[in-house]
Amino acid sequence: SQQGEEDPQALSIQEGENATMNCSYKTSINNLQWYRQNSGRGLVHLILIRSNEREKHSGRLRVTLDTSKKSSSLLITASRAADTASYFCATVLSGGSYIPTFGRGTSLIVHP
Amino acid sequence: EPEVTQTPSHQVTQMGQEVILRCVPISNHLYFYWYRQILGQKVEFLVSFYNNEISEKSEIFDDQFSVERPDGSNFTLKIRSTKLEDSAMYFCASQTGTTPFGTDTQYFGPGTRLTVL
Image (cartoon, rainbow over all chains, first blue to last red):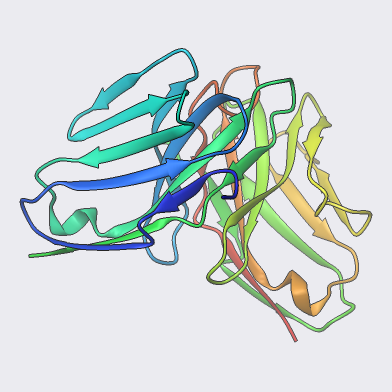
């Protein structure tokens, strides 16, 4: 897999359901960030999780990081139609360079 | 709430022409970034800028690209001789703090859609 690759590519759920998106990466990271992008708009930062952290919460968002499996997940609980967007993870590798690598994203559709 | 702004929202140019994309970062931010996103593809990092110099740049950011902070408020991306493959959305971002990507939240602008004909 590529560095920072999300799955599924697309997710369609009903309002009120939970949505889980995953991000896998290949090499050791300094940190991983999740972003949301509404169609044709800029990215909105959601959560940053550092390599020494395992879980972070922000409102209805929960991010986990498993460095042994080189993967992260983003859980959106009690989804709303307004959560419809693309969600990207971006990884910053450990070792000094701060060039981030983005995944292709998960397209989430929440039906009202 | 302060926000990053970008102008123009859409730029159409002929191949070989020079374009300048403009960004006004959030006023107390110190780190500035340019990214691009070709339609349907990943967001790609181009360059980061701090203390009036380039901090990091990707392989995409070749000699055709340059960045400048001419007046303490604007942050510009210049493409000297555009190619068809430069057609993309270009996003500017800024962050507070003095350590680069990942330590502090980056705030993104709405983007400039560049179309090269």
